[in-house]
Amino acid sequence: MERFFHLKENQTNIRTEILAGLTTFITMAYIIALNPNILSGYKAEGADLWNAVFMATCIASAIGTITMAFFANKPFVMAPGMGLNSFFAVVVANMAAISGMTYVESYQSALCIILIEGIVFLILSVLNIRAKIVQAIPLPIRLGISPAIGLMLLEIGLGSNAGIFSETGGPFYVMRDFFGALSPSIGREQMGSGYTHMVLNVITMFVGLFIILFLSIRGFRGAVLGGMLGSSVLFWIGEAVFLKTNPFSSLKGASFVPPVKDMVDLTLFHFDFKGFFSIGVFTAITLIITFCMIDMFDTIGTLVGTASRAGMVDDEGNMPKMKEALLSDAVGTVSGALTGTPTVTTFVESASGVEAGGRTGLTALTAGILFLCCTFIAPIAALIPPAATSAALIYVGIVMLSGLQKIDWNDISQMGPVSLMLIAMPVSGSIGHGIGIGMIVYTIIKVISGKAKEVSVLTYVISVLFLIKFFLIL
Image (cartoon, rainbow, N blue to C red; front, top):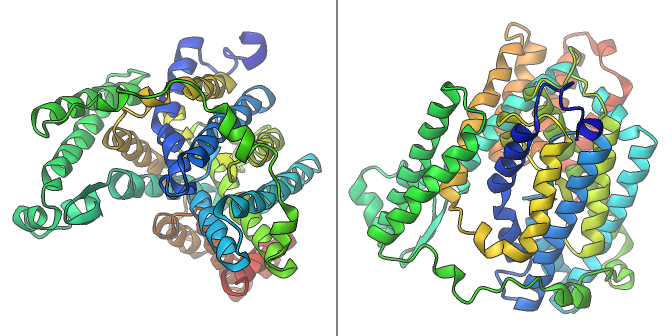
């Protein structure tokens, strides 16, 4: 282990790294079921496609993450990106409506976008162009990425992670609907029978957060994992006592046999280029460019932000082995395309493992192995309630805000773009879009303040590309 991961050099040990890998995995395990849910229309397109995407999610995530472990020796974990998978589902549905293809045929056509994107990223990474793009991001923007991601994690944890449905509709969310209600009676009226479930979510979330804070203050390295497991037990007890439901009922009749055949039949190496370009060459190229730009800066933002929190960057905000990390990310994207899932990218939830002490590729290797195991034990992983993972996301979001102290709040060229990034990431739900807005604002401030020469040519190019992406690409 020492020879591969240099544990002593990174001031860590096997136990800490494995706990960190387990923490990251549990925090992001929701993607295992949510990704196939989104891409198969919550099984509206049939259980076979759901099974195929489920297998692709586990295998591609494992390949990309294990590549990151050995090639870059970083504690970053990969999986199909949220936001990108929803966009992919919309593209698939639109392609089916335009071309008359079935949903599965359209899905196989749209996978061509991901394959081309992955190949482009492989080439750019090998040629070190992606690393140069990272270096072209101004230092204030790089310093602001970590706290902006922190606010995004807070929004996910308090906002969109733990939702409930009831006879009155849904989803209902903690911050918008529980704390947003004018009074408990109004909340109960809006959520109907789901109100009790919502209260259980809120209690689980905050008890989990307080457990994490207590363990963290006491110096326990597995604080995040301990908080998630403790709050999960509380939630299961609450389900049994107050909701009168069996928290383990999903295990009855659950299949533990990996559905490999469905993946082979429907998504593995299934690329329909003829169907893809039937929507028009211009539209096809536009889709490829859109996916490339979103993934490019989502990945860069996650790597820079998480590495900053872990102390893996120098005074200029540069991370060692950035080229290897970006190349590993590209391998993940290609693996996703080959197996049958949209863009596999570095997950922002990797920050939870970093906060648990993960500093090397052994953290990633642990999570990658768990992804492979989940082809057999997915029903067990699904037992962790969203409210428990919300506790971890809230805690990590809080500690990532500490990066704001590095910003010079007396300098408008730093204060302006960073402030907008702080609001843009959680509101848009996109790290890449937040960086894009920050880059544009930074460049314009420098130009109007007479300091245009301080902006590099590549920074100008990136800012213009984002302007085109925001306003001209249909």
